[in-house]
Length: 370
Image 1 (cartoon, rainbow, N blue to C red):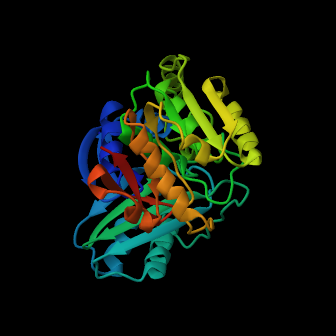
Image 2 (image 1 turned 30 degrees about the vertical axis):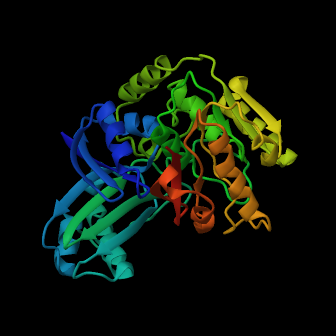
Image 3 (image 1 turned 60 degrees about the horizontal axis):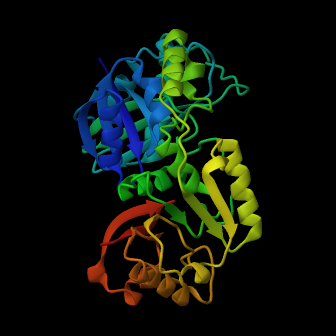
């Protein structure tokens, strides 16, 4: 059995663990931002196609304890049979992370590992390895934590949150993976209505429908494993056909609105590319209008502006209305994900639960109305 690592944004590791288990992986370890598991070669395409909350899917090539000097680092990386993975002259990009380890100079770690890989590919000779820059760069991640080394081969390429449908966005889009995580955390019952009153480019509405319809989010894009030829084409094709067979096109009540007409047009185009425009009701609407309603029921998951990248002189009034809509609509559940720290000043905190998450590196909280 091969070991793999699925990286995530901070705070959604439990969701990533469930994804791996659902797809047949055997969990080995769960730590901050990393889920390690084992499985057959089919797990490479399967997790790349199916992970909604993951960042990248890696193959674990080597792990070694007590790597506290550069000689041991070089030898461990050099001993990997790199020719098994790089059959072409791919440009290789080495990234490293070091935490609580004797080797802490990241640029030096990356340089040593790149030299070790090059020497292995040259069969230990002094032959120069030429990289073909017309090919996609292939990523190697070096993790050093408490002097334990893990060497990881990136099977994903561009991060998993890059679904393919969002060609256009606005100034502060939420990552597709984080939007999916919020929807999964909300435990949306698909028969209930789903609302996003600050829909922007439509990410929440699109991800909600893809979850409800069991659509594999990575089916319509390419991955690094295809170029590396890590998996037999028959296995890949079987995974594609299996994923397609598991989706369905039931109807759901999804409502997405925004005050900006241009954003609504962008959201419509994104939904059309995703094939999810049939069940989303898009509308140009000021949130103040919605805040006057008293009949709403279902789930509201939204990412309102929070005065970090988007400026709003009436930000306080906006957040008071967000709280109001939940107080006047007791059948409406969940709430916003926001980095606006002053939101706590406008609400009765006893009425909410908060979950810490990160949006593009920014600390934010996902609020749930009890």
